[in-house]
Structures are given as C-alpha cells and as structure tokens.
Image 1: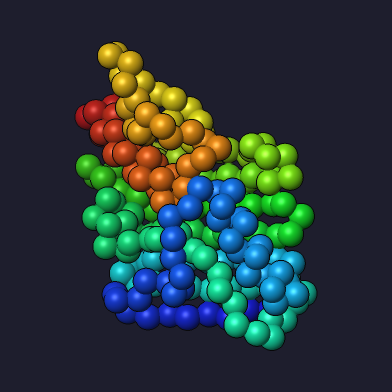
Image 2: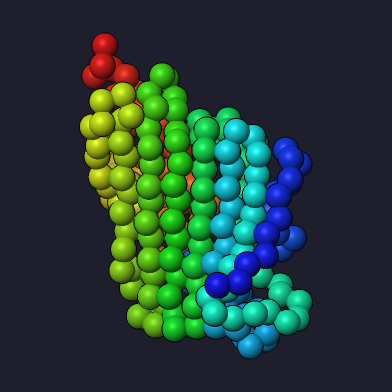
Length: 201
C-alpha cells in the first residue's frame, strides 16, 4: 500500500478539489481521475481530532505517477466541532469494480451525553441504486449501552404532520451526498443525545 498525506492546523480543509456530489457521481468523478493515471482504487481519509486535521490518500498495491484530480466532500471542520464532534474520521474507499465504501467514526458529545459513533455505508455502483451496507451504531460511553439504526431509517422518519424529521423532502438514501449524510446524522444525534440525557436523570 502506498500513501500520500497532508496535515495542518485549524485552517487546513483537505484536498484542493471538494464538491458536494451524490454518491454515484462521487464515485464517477474519482474513477475518472484514477483511470487517467492507470490506477484502480484509492482510499481517502479525513480526520479531525482536538482541532487538528489530517488528510491521507492511499493506493492498494499501486503507485501514482501523474497528477491526480480526486474529489472529496466539503467537510467544514468548524461546523463539525460546533455540532458536537470531538473526534471525526471520514474514510472513503473507491475501486473500479464499482464499489464505494464510506465510513464515519468519532466521538460526539452534546448535552453531557458522550457517544461513540460508527457509520458504514457501502454502495455497489454496478447494481445501480444497490446499497449493500447501511448501518449506524451509537454507544453511550457512560454505561456502554448501544443502539443501531440506518440512514434509510433516519431519512424516512417523520413528524406527526408527515414532514420529515431529519432530512429534506427530496433526500433519498440512493441520492444523498456525503455532506448530506453528515448533516442528517448530526440532527439525529442531537435528538438522540437529548433522549439519553432525559433517561439518565
């Protein structure tokens, strides 16, 4: 495995080319860049911890020889911290067999409720709208109690008047961007933290 990395202080924002794209288009843009360099895969990792940011790109058994114009989601580290993320790691794996894997891990804390979060989302582009894995795990670090849900469930959750609770009316698990995933997850975790705080009092 070969890798190239960057790091920086509070002003570091990740790779140069950042765009909000649905997962299908995100895969297409990056595969186009990889194939132009005779590459078949890459793993991009963005990590925020204690205000420090790092970004790393890895290639399994391949060595890039030209300029890569990879696309990464627009992550705003200030907004992540404000939302309650104390640690946030976003990893995206793409290959030319049509696979897109997204993993988010981190420590989220709001209203005195510390949660360890793990989101796993795998899409098989070869299957068109196929979603192989859609899983979110939340663990309350105070007592180890855990819960599990999915993006599809969060997107579909509705208020009494029929309006969606955490997502926009046109959001679907098949067309959501990574930025959309982060926003929806933050809204859900805020409410989940409130429910945990009430349960503990």
